[in-house]
Image (cartoon, rainbow, N blue to C red; front, side):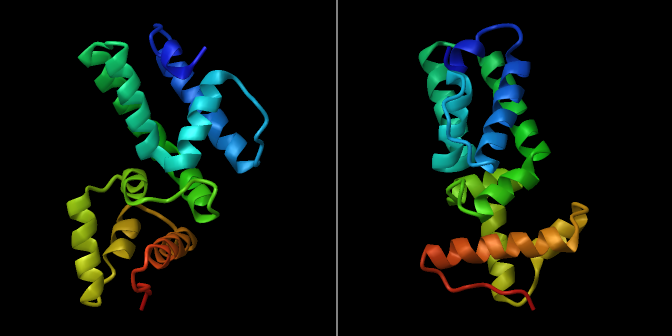
Length: 167
């Protein structure tokens, strides 16, 4: 069964969590063997466009299958929780290119709005280090902050923008 079919059942939270984590593990191990249809859905969506792609596809399918508004909100909230719990692994997979990085995916993984991101970029241009400050506030270690800066630099370079470096 596809992931969306499983999400119609009462145990949808366990199914979403299990397939999300299995997909991350498969991507981390570069294991591209066929798994369950539900896990394959999640793995392909993640690799193509990260969390933003997963949200987009799930919301499209929930709309087509006429999920209740309450179930739709609950699934999106659970996906947000899974994203935050697995942020380190998601960022690692983005850093090595296993999960394609785009602005929506990056913002979703960080839990930032586009306006917050633009504010951060403006502050960086003036010589501040808002990402670093924010990451310290979140209790992130220096090694992770450095890895995230590298990920952001790589994304900016790939998208034709001037590299932003830490002072």
